[in-house]
Image (cartoon, rainbow over the protein chains, first blue to last red):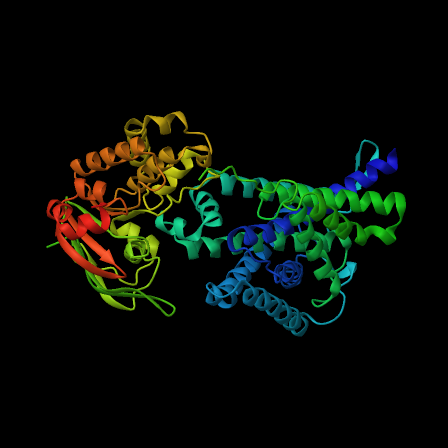
Length: 303
Length: 236
């Protein structure tokens, strides 16, 4: 029983991080119908930006306010990065075949990874150099849970609630939903389509930045920018988005959570060898039985 | 001076020359109709006015200013609203969301709320379906929603593309009655229709478009009475 709860908590914490990244994939897919392969690199940059900021500001044992400020600054920096990626690499290809954009996304990804190596170096940044959060251990239902995991879940959930409020409760959110359905018709409504697309990249990248910081803290290290683990993490988040139904926001959250939980339970009860296989196993299963994902849209339409 | 002035407009889709030197003008307060068969370039003309396709030559002047090359959302702000071919409603969003999206270019919350109420009193069925997904509406209801949504931008000129498409005759009559009412309230309308008979019966002026060129331009009553139009578009 106690190990069950342990896997459960760990699954929720990892799953909410997948969900944060998955949201960025799913929002861009929803609005442009292409997979932004550079998204996992923005996520990686989130970790490095916050680390470098912490070093620069000498906030290696940050107070709660400083930690929040670090998070917000990293989010802002990644938001700018995401904006620039769209503006410089994707927008000029707006009317090009989708394959061109996809290949460009891979190019952007490689560019960021290699530039990242130049700027941030090729060494692993270990736990001792990272900002230290209080190593407080909570006891939930008698199970010890690390403070950093609680912080990760709380932050991720807060950001997702914020996103939900933005998309479903504001005018710009209504604009995003309209652009996701049809660019031309959205334009006829007076919606500035290009600005909405920029905004989508800004929001998705900011969420990925938060995930980058939280993942670094959770695992206690930052691997070098071109390390395959970043791409693998991003790829799993993408799988989470597909499981939930690509283009669907609650779907990305559900998919992330589901993936985090199944990974932890499989690793806990079967073997850690299968932990990475589970994501892709789930993907195959979903594509076979429910290709539009768990919450994928099935629009009621009469013509 | 006319509210809308289109001069020598040329449009190319790749190698296809879709519009060849089209000139039309719409006076304030009028209903002007553009009739012609499928593929004549009627929809293309409206899409050019809304900035959805770019012109390769010619000019479009609205209220004295050139709007050629402007983006769709900028053209809405200038005062042209477009109810597109096939209605283009957001099927997965509610009726209310659709109406609010029509007012995206505006920021006067109180004015938007009162305009939504006005849409509901003009189209009571939309009030009943307010919270339903717009895709569940019947074809006629969707057309009403499309018109109501375009009016939410408070335009000076309303572009209507084939409002009769796929609708039963009684519904078509109801829609045309509404178009006339809206015009009587002062709205200038450019109406594109395959149903030339209906369109010419409510319009002040008509243009006949054929393979991307204006073939005839005359008072709507005279066009409806002319032998050429009767033979080609009104079934003898």
